[in-house]
Image (cartoon, rainbow, N blue to C red; front, side):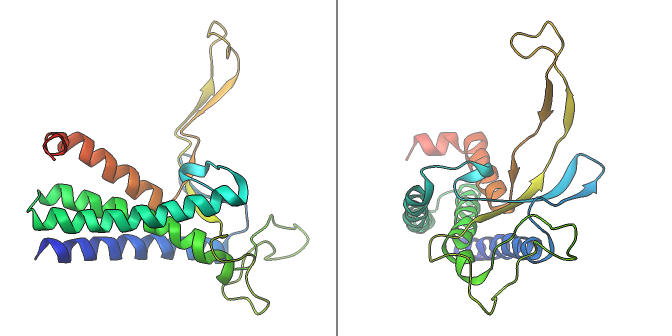
Length: 209
Protein backbone atom coordinates (compact mmCIF):
# COMPACT_ATOMS: atom_id res chain seq x y z
CA UNK A 1 0.00 0.00 0.00
CA UNK A 2 1.41 3.39 -0.97
CA UNK A 3 2.09 6.10 1.61
CA UNK A 4 -0.45 8.35 -0.10
CA UNK A 5 -3.21 5.75 0.22
CA UNK A 6 -2.30 5.13 3.87
CA UNK A 7 -2.63 8.88 4.55
CA UNK A 8 -6.03 9.02 2.85
CA UNK A 9 -7.32 6.01 4.80
CA UNK A 10 -6.05 7.29 8.15
CA UNK A 11 -7.60 10.72 7.63
CA UNK A 12 -10.88 9.17 6.45
CA UNK A 13 -11.26 6.73 9.36
CA UNK A 14 -10.29 9.28 12.04
CA UNK A 15 -12.78 11.78 10.61
CA UNK A 16 -15.45 9.07 10.37
CA UNK A 17 -14.96 8.00 13.99
CA UNK A 18 -14.75 11.58 15.27
CA UNK A 19 -17.85 12.82 13.46
CA UNK A 20 -19.90 9.68 14.16
CA UNK A 21 -19.28 10.00 17.90
CA UNK A 22 -20.01 13.74 17.88
CA UNK A 23 -23.27 13.33 15.97
CA UNK A 24 -24.39 10.49 18.26
CA UNK A 25 -23.63 12.60 21.33
CA UNK A 26 -25.25 15.73 19.92
CA UNK A 27 -28.46 13.94 18.91
CA UNK A 28 -28.81 11.68 21.98
CA UNK A 29 -27.47 13.65 24.97
CA UNK A 30 -28.49 16.93 26.54
CA UNK A 31 -25.87 19.53 27.38
CA UNK A 32 -24.08 18.62 30.61
CA UNK A 33 -25.24 15.00 30.61
CA UNK A 34 -22.73 12.57 32.08
CA UNK A 35 -22.78 8.84 31.24
CA UNK A 36 -20.30 6.56 33.06
CA UNK A 37 -18.59 4.17 30.63
CA UNK A 38 -15.93 2.43 32.73
CA UNK A 39 -16.49 2.91 36.44
CA UNK A 40 -16.10 6.54 37.51
CA UNK A 41 -12.85 7.21 35.67
CA UNK A 42 -14.10 7.23 32.06
CA UNK A 43 -17.30 9.09 31.23
CA UNK A 44 -19.10 10.55 28.26
CA UNK A 45 -19.73 14.11 29.45
CA UNK A 46 -21.33 16.33 26.81
CA UNK A 47 -20.13 19.91 26.60
CA UNK A 48 -19.60 22.38 23.77
CA UNK A 49 -16.97 25.06 23.36
CA UNK A 50 -16.39 27.98 21.03
CA UNK A 51 -12.65 27.75 20.82
CA UNK A 52 -9.54 25.67 21.06
CA UNK A 53 -8.74 22.10 22.05
CA UNK A 54 -9.64 20.67 25.49
CA UNK A 55 -12.42 23.21 26.05
CA UNK A 56 -10.25 26.35 25.97
CA UNK A 57 -11.64 29.51 24.37
CA UNK A 58 -10.13 32.60 22.81
CA UNK A 59 -11.44 35.98 21.66
CA UNK A 60 -15.21 35.47 21.44
CA UNK A 61 -16.91 35.24 18.03
CA UNK A 62 -14.18 37.20 16.23
CA UNK A 63 -11.54 34.98 17.79
CA UNK A 64 -13.54 31.93 16.73
CA UNK A 65 -13.64 33.02 13.09
CA UNK A 66 -9.92 33.79 13.15
CA UNK A 67 -9.17 30.47 14.82
CA UNK A 68 -11.22 28.50 12.30
CA UNK A 69 -9.60 30.38 9.42
CA UNK A 70 -6.17 29.62 10.88
CA UNK A 71 -7.11 25.95 11.18
CA UNK A 72 -8.19 25.86 7.51
CA UNK A 73 -4.86 27.37 6.47
CA UNK A 74 -2.97 24.99 8.77
CA UNK A 75 -4.76 21.92 7.36
CA UNK A 76 -3.98 23.08 3.82
CA UNK A 77 -0.33 23.62 4.78
CA UNK A 78 -0.17 20.20 6.47
CA UNK A 79 -1.66 18.55 3.39
CA UNK A 80 0.97 20.18 1.17
CA UNK A 81 3.74 19.26 3.64
CA UNK A 82 2.60 15.63 3.62
CA UNK A 83 2.72 15.69 -0.19
CA UNK A 84 6.30 17.02 -0.08
CA UNK A 85 7.36 14.45 2.54
CA UNK A 86 5.95 11.59 0.46
CA UNK A 87 7.93 12.81 -2.55
CA UNK A 88 11.07 12.99 -0.41
CA UNK A 89 10.39 9.46 0.85
CA UNK A 90 10.30 10.52 4.51
CA UNK A 91 9.79 7.76 7.11
CA UNK A 92 6.30 6.27 7.04
CA UNK A 93 5.86 6.89 10.77
CA UNK A 94 6.52 10.61 10.33
CA UNK A 95 4.14 10.90 7.39
CA UNK A 96 1.37 8.98 9.15
CA UNK A 97 1.78 11.08 12.31
CA UNK A 98 1.28 14.18 10.15
CA UNK A 99 -1.85 12.55 8.71
CA UNK A 100 -3.22 11.91 12.22
CA UNK A 101 -2.63 15.57 13.18
CA UNK A 102 -4.27 16.73 9.94
CA UNK A 103 -7.33 14.54 10.55
CA UNK A 104 -7.68 15.89 14.09
CA UNK A 105 -7.50 19.49 12.96
CA UNK A 106 -10.00 18.82 10.17
CA UNK A 107 -12.41 17.13 12.61
CA UNK A 108 -12.75 20.24 14.74
CA UNK A 109 -12.97 22.46 11.65
CA UNK A 110 -16.07 20.54 10.58
CA UNK A 111 -17.74 21.36 13.91
CA UNK A 112 -16.76 25.02 13.77
CA UNK A 113 -17.70 25.52 10.15
CA UNK A 114 -20.90 23.50 9.77
CA UNK A 115 -22.51 22.48 13.08
CA UNK A 116 -24.23 25.84 13.46
CA UNK A 117 -25.89 25.25 10.10
CA UNK A 118 -27.02 21.64 10.56
CA UNK A 119 -27.99 21.41 14.26
CA UNK A 120 -30.31 23.31 16.52
CA UNK A 121 -29.11 24.16 20.02
CA UNK A 122 -28.28 21.65 22.70
CA UNK A 123 -29.19 22.85 26.18
CA UNK A 124 -29.59 21.69 29.75
CA UNK A 125 -32.39 19.24 30.31
CA UNK A 126 -35.70 20.45 31.70
CA UNK A 127 -36.57 17.77 34.30
CA UNK A 128 -40.26 18.25 33.52
CA UNK A 129 -39.89 17.59 29.78
CA UNK A 130 -38.80 14.16 28.54
CA UNK A 131 -36.00 14.35 25.99
CA UNK A 132 -35.48 18.08 26.36
CA UNK A 133 -32.06 19.56 25.66
CA UNK A 134 -31.21 17.12 22.86
CA UNK A 135 -30.38 18.70 19.51
CA UNK A 136 -31.91 17.77 16.18
CA UNK A 137 -29.89 17.18 13.02
CA UNK A 138 -31.16 19.26 10.07
CA UNK A 139 -33.97 20.92 12.08
CA UNK A 140 -36.91 22.34 10.05
CA UNK A 141 -36.29 25.83 11.46
CA UNK A 142 -32.62 25.85 10.54
CA UNK A 143 -29.49 25.65 12.65
CA UNK A 144 -28.42 27.69 15.67
CA UNK A 145 -25.70 29.71 13.91
CA UNK A 146 -23.98 30.78 10.72
CA UNK A 147 -21.06 29.37 8.74
CA UNK A 148 -17.87 29.31 10.88
CA UNK A 149 -19.96 29.91 14.01
CA UNK A 150 -20.51 26.31 15.09
CA UNK A 151 -19.56 24.97 18.51
CA UNK A 152 -17.06 22.13 18.94
CA UNK A 153 -18.54 19.02 20.59
CA UNK A 154 -16.50 17.47 23.43
CA UNK A 155 -17.37 14.36 25.38
CA UNK A 156 -14.35 12.32 26.57
CA UNK A 157 -13.82 12.80 30.30
CA UNK A 158 -11.27 10.94 32.43
CA UNK A 159 -11.50 12.03 36.09
CA UNK A 160 -8.88 9.43 36.96
CA UNK A 161 -7.84 10.66 40.40
CA UNK A 162 -9.96 12.56 42.92
CA UNK A 163 -8.64 13.62 46.27
CA UNK A 164 -7.75 16.38 48.69
CA UNK A 165 -4.49 18.26 49.01
CA UNK A 166 -2.83 17.66 52.42
CA UNK A 167 -3.13 20.60 54.80
CA UNK A 168 0.62 21.29 54.61
CA UNK A 169 0.48 21.71 50.78
CA UNK A 170 1.29 25.35 49.81
CA UNK A 171 -1.71 27.52 48.84
CA UNK A 172 -4.07 24.58 48.18
CA UNK A 173 -3.94 22.72 51.48
CA UNK A 174 -7.30 21.12 52.31
CA UNK A 175 -8.76 21.85 48.85
CA UNK A 176 -10.04 19.08 46.59
CA UNK A 177 -8.28 18.21 43.36
CA UNK A 178 -9.18 16.27 40.23
CA UNK A 179 -6.92 14.69 37.62
CA UNK A 180 -7.60 14.67 34.61
CA UNK A 181 -10.06 17.60 34.38
CA UNK A 182 -10.24 18.59 30.65
CA UNK A 183 -13.07 17.24 28.49
CA UNK A 184 -12.07 16.64 24.88
CA UNK A 185 -12.93 14.72 21.70
CA UNK A 186 -11.33 12.22 19.32
CA UNK A 187 -10.00 15.02 17.10
CA UNK A 188 -8.15 16.57 20.06
CA UNK A 189 -6.76 13.14 20.89
CA UNK A 190 -5.54 12.64 17.32
CA UNK A 191 -3.66 15.95 17.35
CA UNK A 192 -2.06 15.16 20.71
CA UNK A 193 -1.06 11.61 19.70
CA UNK A 194 0.37 12.76 16.36
CA UNK A 195 2.46 15.51 17.91
CA UNK A 196 3.69 13.23 20.71
CA UNK A 197 4.65 10.53 18.20
CA UNK A 198 6.75 12.98 16.18
CA UNK A 199 8.47 14.39 19.27
CA UNK A 200 9.21 10.95 20.69
CA UNK A 201 10.33 9.09 17.58
CA UNK A 202 11.17 11.57 14.82
CA UNK A 203 13.09 14.43 16.42
CA UNK A 204 16.25 13.40 14.58
CA UNK A 205 14.44 13.54 11.24
CA UNK A 206 12.91 16.93 12.15
CA UNK A 207 16.33 18.37 12.90
CA UNK A 208 17.52 17.26 9.49
CA UNK A 209 14.77 19.03 7.55
